[in-house]
Image (cartoon, rainbow, N blue to C red):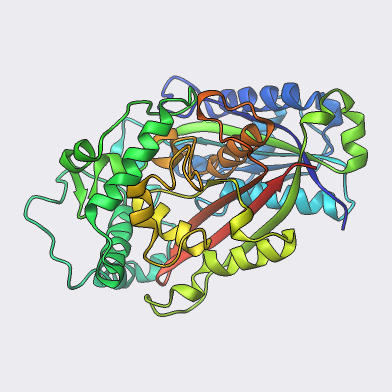
Length: 413
C-alpha cells in the first residue's frame, strides 16, 4: 500500500452558531484546509463529506455533501456522503486515506460539518435517539442503566432539564467502572478539570473557562456521577483534512515540510461481550490493530485525543488504548499524568467536553489538533517533543459499548 500524508488541516471555532448555515461552516473549513495545504479547488480529486443530523434538523437528506461542496465551488468529482454516528468524521478520514492508499486518487478531501444547536430543544436532543437500535430502545436503556447496579445515586444528583440519552449511557458505564475498579467521582472530576484547563489555551474551543476539581463536583448534576462540566455540549462546527500520496504531496511542494504521515487508520465495529470484559472492548481491539499496522506500541505515543463525550469516556478509552492499566487512568488523572507536562498528555485541545462535539466534524477536529501538535504549532498547549499522535473517535451504542470506533496514528514522515 502507498504511504499517505496529511497535507493540510482546518477547523472552524466550535460552538453555538445559530446565525450560520451548514454551507457557511463547510465553506470556512474548506477554504482553511486549501490554504493550509497550499492547494486549490482544482487539486481535489475526491471528497468524503461527514454529517449526521442535517436530515433530522433541516430535512436535507441523501445529497448533503454534493450540495454543501457545490456551494464551495467543488464539482465534477466523486463525493461520498458519510454518516457513522459520532465517529462520522473519523470514518470520512479513514475512507479518504484508503482511497489514496488504493491508488484511486492522489489528493483527497475529508470534511465534516454539523449544525446541531437549535432553539427547539426537543428536536435538538432527539437527534441522538437513532444512535442505537431503535427497535429495542427500552431494553437498551435497561441494559446500560443496570450496569450501574450497586452504586447508589445520591438524592438530587439527576437533572430535571432535558439532556441527551447518551448521558444515561455514560452514567451506567461510570458506575460499572466505579464498582469494578474503585474509580471515584473525584477522579472523574479531575479529568474534567484537566480538560477545562487545557481548553483555556485553545481559541477554537467552545468553552475556555478553567474549572477546579471542587468546582466540577459542585456544578449542576446531569445524572450521577456526572455533573455539567464533565459532559460535552451540543455544538456546531466543521473541520477538514487533505490527504495525499507522495506524488500528490509533491504537487503541493510549498507545504511539503509540514505534512504528517498516516501511520495507521483502523475502523472497527463492536461485538457481543460481557460488560466487565474490558479486554474485548472495541477500542482495545481497534488499538491493537492500529499499533500493529504502525509498528509502534502505546509507550511510544506522545499525545492523544480521545472521545470524551463525558470525562468518564476518557477514563475508559485511555485504558482501552493501553496508555494506562485497567482501573489506573482515574488515579493517573489525579496525579497529573494525563495533563500537559505529564507522562502522556490527553486531550490538549480540551477534548469534546470543552472544545465541543459537532458530531459530524468531531473526528476531524481531533486530526486538526494532532497535526497541529506534530507540527509544533499548538502554542501554549504544545506537547513537547510530540512525535507520534493518536486519535480515538467512537460512535453509537450496540450492547455495552460503542457501535463503531476509529483509531488513527500519525507521525513525522
